[in-house]
Length: 235
Image 1 (cartoon, rainbow, N blue to C red):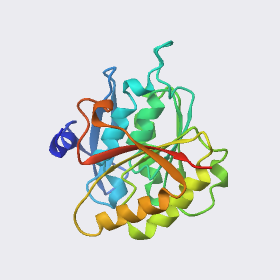
Image 2 (image 1 turned 90 degrees about the vertical axis):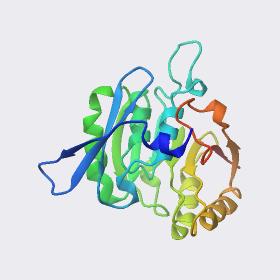
Image 3 (image 1 turned 30 degrees about the vertical axis):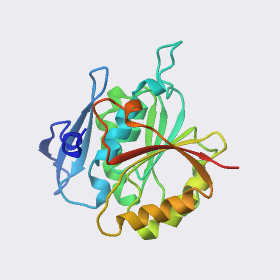
Image 4 (image 1 turned 90 degrees about the horizontal axis):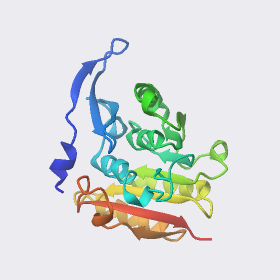
């Protein structure tokens, strides 16, 4: 699937929020059951204020057969403790929460209002739970322990200065049974290839990695430019 198709897979509409001078528009993502997750994203703001293609790919991956309990017919995320790093708009963690997971969506302080708004917008779809909390990579993670069952991260590899803090946070949060699901777009311009290489050189000292092939991802929402990985802590 082309990157352009991923980006345009859901048709956004534009709305104004009375309590803010900022302009938002709504991104919609239809789930397999026909329900629609809606998130507000900013027309202006930093990287965390918009929905990136890798987030869509990861969110839809959570609905694939890889997460289906054949005995019960339920998604295996149900009742799991999930933490999303660099949640941004929260679309990945919110999809997990609608599948029954208990999700903590984490990002910097300036994204908390957006995350809380998007949790509220989707409250009727959430069958698990969703809360937003501040977590700055490289800082104390005690409040987020014991380790979650699953850590989600979409397009978190972009700043050279964030590589070491991000890996340290992953190490601190991951137990021996924690599955980290990492999805990111491979970018070939500027410093992106260097940052990606730095990240994996450091990460693979502490984690083993398994790449999920495109034929195991959502049949519509995937792209050769977007990598999807399962990471497990090496003890």
